[in-house]
Length: 297
Figure (cartoon, rainbow, N blue to C red):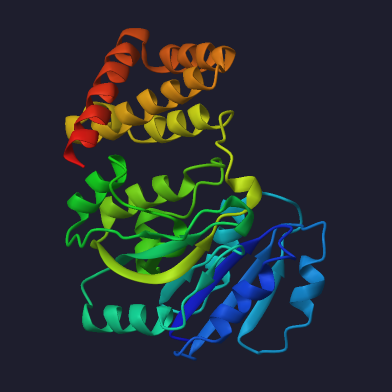
């Protein structure tokens, strides 16, 4: 029985899957299992995975393409350990990731969820230097929840380590969501588990060329998905600040890039779901929040 299960969903990742897998196999803690779930890749991803002979690695292939959340959920169902970690196939662990999180959970038996920090690397062609994504050291679930809603915490899924027992209470990843599923999953965890975040940088995220563009077409759908599932996002002033800021930034970007048609469509979509007057109030609140943050920094 391994002490940690690492779950990696993958789709058409033949260029990056080797780096991802090697980063797990080279961990200073060796007592783990790595479960890679392929979501019906059409490139050479599965062929590359088939060359791995390490007995700690299992490769599962989805019967049909169902998205990253379904792939993660299948990995969770197959996992044997009591502690679960996640990694995306584009990214990599630093060598001491698993040893540090395992020691943390061993020393803190009352903690159910740990959110760590990371650094993000950009393609050489972008000319951008690497950036550190350092999370605050938060010690209770309410603080973590507020930070998630207000976007004061970097909550990418590879930053999460979760005890298996917690998933029975929180549920798995929502397979109906294609964006912000990590945010929605973490919100549910904060309601049923003892969650903390730490500033330790334990993994490396790689921003790919296609991920550098701003996804204008799916933003509003993902925002409404979270707000529909968690009404406290709109109802609680402490949480609503994050929603308001997201709305204001979204419309500011659309107008700046002259995406007037998308702006009108998204404004109508949110207004139909939650009310136009409420939306106008949120946008104004969001502009105030953006200004407040600029002055604070």
